[in-house]
Amino acid sequence: MRKFMIALLGASVLAGAAEAYDGEQFVVCKLNPLGDNFLALRSCGSTSCDVIRKLGPDTFVITMEPYATNGWREVIVQQSSQDWSYAGVKGWVYGKYICHVDLSE
Image 1 (cartoon, one colour):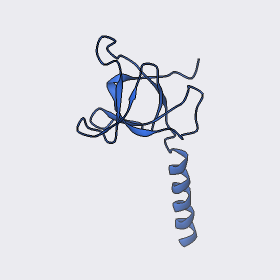
Image 2 (spheres, rainbow, N blue to C red; image 1 turned 45 degrees about the vertical axis):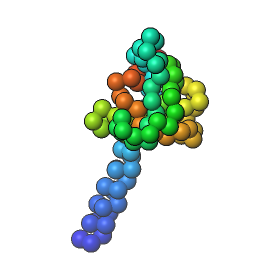
Image 3 (cartoon, rainbow, N blue to C red; image 1 turned 120 degrees about the vertical axis):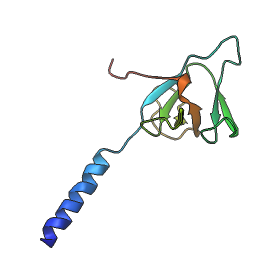
Image 4 (cartoon, rainbow, N blue to C red; image 1 turned 180 degrees about the vertical axis):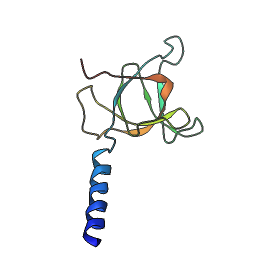
C-alpha cells in the first residue's frame, strides 16, 4: 500500500509539472495615438506602483500567469516576436492594452 501511495504522489507531481504555464505571447495594442501612446510597465498590478518602462505600440510581451489579476497581467518584455529567452524586463501591465498573438498561423 505504501508503494502505491508513493507512486500515486509521484504521478500527481509529474502531472502538475506537465500542466505548468509557460507563457503566451501578446503585443501592446489599442493605445490612443492622440494621447500618451504608451503602456506603462509597472512594478506591481496597480496604478499606484512605479512605472518601470513605457512600452510603445507593437511591443511584444510574454505573460507569466494564464489569467489577469484585477485586470493586470504580469509580463516579461521581449526584444522581438522571436525572443523567447525570458530575459527581458519583468513587470505588470493593464490587460486591456495587450492583444494575444496567434502563433498557429
